[in-house]
Each structure stands twice: as C-alpha cells, then as structure tokens.
Length: 172
Image (cartoon, helix red, strand yellow):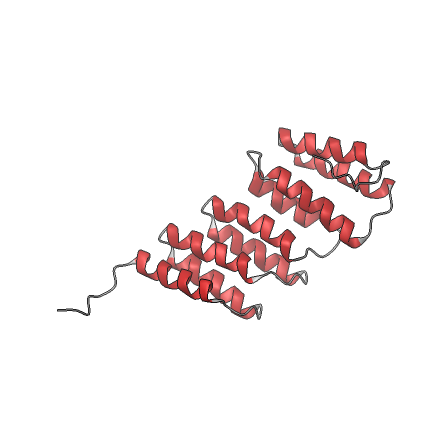
C-alpha cells in the first residue's frame, strides 16, 4: 500500500509500519514511522500524506480508533483538515461521537482547522444513536472553532433532535 512518492530509503520502514498497524502494534508502527521520517527528507506536506496513508490503512484494522488517535498524537506536523477528517470518521463510523469531539478538540488546540465535514459526520453519527448531547457538543465545538455550519450541518442537527425525542404534534 506504499505510495510511489515515498523516497526509496524510507520505503522499507513504511512497509513495516503498515505491517505493525495490521497486527495492531501501534507503538512499533510509530517506531517505523520515525525511522522512515529520519531516513529521508520529507516536507511537511509529505509527512501529512504519509500519516494520511497510514490512517487510511489503519481504518481497516480492529483498533482503528485508538490507532488513529495515537498516530495523530505522534504526528510531528500540525494535522490538516483531510487528516483530521480521516481520524474523526473512524469515531463516527463506530458511533463514538464523544470520542470524535474529544479528538477534534485536541486537534483544534494544536492549531488544526478542521472542515465542516468533520463536524457534520459526528453530528450525523450522534443523531443516528439518538445522542442529542453528542450532536450538540460537536456543533458547539464547531462554532467555537469558527467553522461555519453548512445546510447539511443544520439538517443533521435537526434530525438528531427529532430522533432524540418525539417532536410535539402541531396538527390537531
């Protein structure tokens, strides 16, 4: 699964990092990521791309949420919006909106500017679980992060409210 643009000196380390992720051995994977980054010259964008590739790979493993959080915590550069979305979507797909909100809050404190889509997927996930508190927490973090809500955001928030408790009937 190694990208063609990975420098040849770093390629064996990236392959070993993927193999360690597949086994669920995240500390060993991070050791190989360090070795890859130290063995070749990586720009910040290349580093983000490497972590993004590993996050995509880790999504297919059993410990994907824990792996995503540890990979991002270990990331030497400030994660960008696509990297944040990859990590948050693992929480959303598992129905863990609270974990996704905690992860996004940590990324925002590191200077990451997540996209509206990252918040949308958490709000929608919380709504599916009838977790109005999780949906509101994601929306509140979105507003504190100065990310503008989209029509999809507001529709997801309304749907979460509707699923959490029946709305009163206005037609008699």
